[in-house]
Amino acid sequence: MARQAGSQGAETAERARRAALSLFARHGYAAVSMREIAAETGVGAAALYNHFATKQDLLTELMVKHLEALLAAWDAEPEAAAETEPRAALAAFARFHLRFHAARRDAVFVSTMELRSLDQPNFHRVERLRRAWEDRMEAIIRRGAEAGIFRAPEPRIATMALIGMLTGVTNWYRPAGRLPASAIEALHVEMTLSALGAAMTGDDACSPHP
Image (cartoon, rainbow, N blue to C red; front, side, top):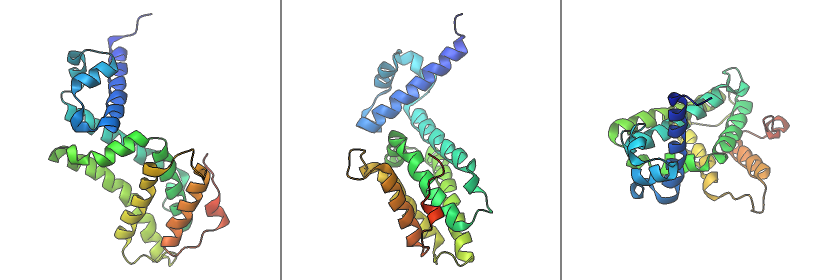
């Protein structure tokens, strides 16, 4: 049975997103044309414009989808519940952040490095989602500070510093390096907790979600 036009259109749009993400990550947004994205997708430039009016729209959609997926995936984790003990919640958040981003290196790179390429309305749209992710961590830190578990006189600054550290792993970690991913993860969970004066426990060190 022939596939419906709607199905074919959705597949084409998804191929275009993957092609654009790869090209933006390799060459930078400014250096890539819609014609090149179309060629990588396997369609004509006119067909690509049926799905994305501008290259800016395509970049924005890549960033928005990445951040919305990040938020939805964390919110579905049991440790995301507000009643989770703060130390366990923060350890789980750090572990989740590392794993989610490690599996999406190109998306992380583009979403970080190409913020400068967004026009103001799109920048604010993406920035609201980025802020929502930061708010998730900040809420955990504030709960821990209020409970006397964390030392965090400036929870917002602590959040920005820790997220920067965790996200930065995607820039330098290579599977062929001296330490395996599991060891890098454990070290970063420990550093996250230690930065707030919280000792790492055996429960924090475990890895419940492969």
